[in-house]
Image (cartoon, rainbow, N blue to C red; front, side, top):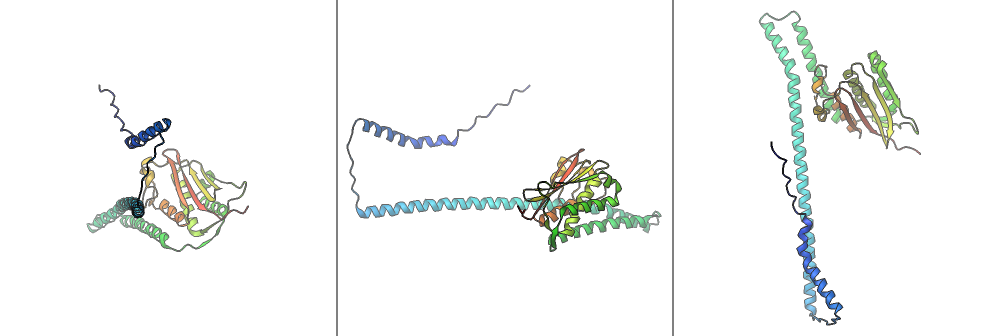
Length: 318
């Protein structure tokens, strides 16, 4: 049995290093007080030539200037070093994100291409099943959908926003109603709550089509990953932001996957059984970022997920 780990001694605080520098000042003060108490009135007269005064003053000013410039230069070097470290970190993160994207893309492309090639080989050997072309068509459609999603995401980064005044309460209600008309079960388990007191949620300036696309994606995810539990959509104004929350009681997202949910093609480990490209949340984050907003996600595996969308609003009139 091993004993407790010994506690390492803490290094002496840096403040103790100043004590030797204070000794001359303390001794000089003590000696001066003693002489004053004894009534010592002796004076020391020092004569300095005028040229020496100017020379000394010039040297002193130069010394101060040199020290100030040295301090500024040191500060600039530290700032430049910090900037280089931040830039290197950003580059490393970008490279790591790109590496993950390529790995996911390889995974998404591998299965359809393998299935198509296997069917083609079987057809050449006369051993293709009756529904071989159906398999090829299905896998080709999957590839086409993936490429289309990636193209759509690329276009979102560069296309000009066609902004207009948007009433978010109307937009949210229309989005919920549209999805509910396609999925009656979604309509039955979804509630919308809007905070109107002490004032309604102000309008926002936004590209209506892109904003609708983003909200549709969030609602579709809530419907897809929560089998039959309730879904709540909440709209409120908070400190100059319009806030939309979509909360579900679905399977949730594992902790290890949450830092990457907004990456391209990212899919949670517990969502592989549900069809999807992993583009949805990336698209949502891109739309809101381009509108000066933000997207946040909180989730607990086995409990559910809350996606929070923030958009800047018009200044409120008192």
